[in-house]
Image 1: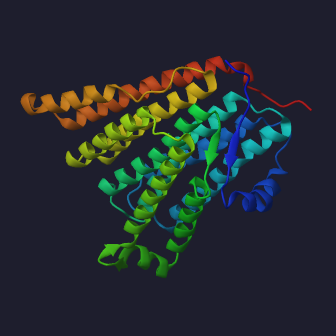
Image 2: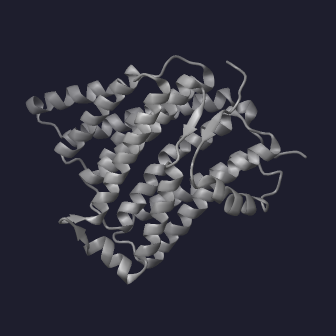
Image 3: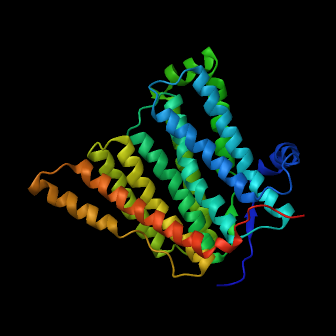
Length: 330
């Protein structure tokens, strides 16, 4: 394994301003001894707690919207605190990079889920498409990193997307804003449809930029995109429950992203998309003959790949366990 060195080119248009006026200012109150990974764990815990809480409610009221709003803010702040802390204390490590960036893959999807729930948008095909589009952007970003050994964030990325979501949630707390997002249409289309279009265009821009920098389209990405698109179509076609479709789409992409990160951090083989997906497709073909429930196929697939991801994560943590710090010493 090559000596670890974090290489990242971040051209985010909002990061310099937020870093100077928010993140760095608030970070001064973080004790030097607190390890960066603890700060990452705070961001993970708050966003996942909010996700589990929202699953158990029907229609979010204003109080719950405010909770989600501040939870997302806390997540964003602590998600940037860890990098600042690692830099100041000189404790940057492959374990920290993995924990920070891989958790963002899941946390980003949770924020989209909270956004859909608060705006009372049905968790159907448009939700699946939003989750899939977001994951494609993450996937091409970390696949590029595994090839070029440098992480690249464009001018408009996840940070800008989260800020836009926060502004929309804030407007939703007003009666005018609530009426606008729930009732207003443009060309007989709900306003949120144009947000989805913006997301898709952003993903296309991200993919195109990555291909331009790589100067070729990786075959593994074509494979991933084709099989994942079929998976998305089947979730919509069979009208799979949102939580099962969410699981299946999520683990399919998360598995490939994990392999890309592993390739970058451990110099392992070139990442390849999950092959269990073909078994799922095969079972769906046989379903027409044996008449079993399609949703069970998607559920089993999601749980099997999730178990494999968990096992791979345990192995990665084991390899990098020497980088874990219980406290920073001056």
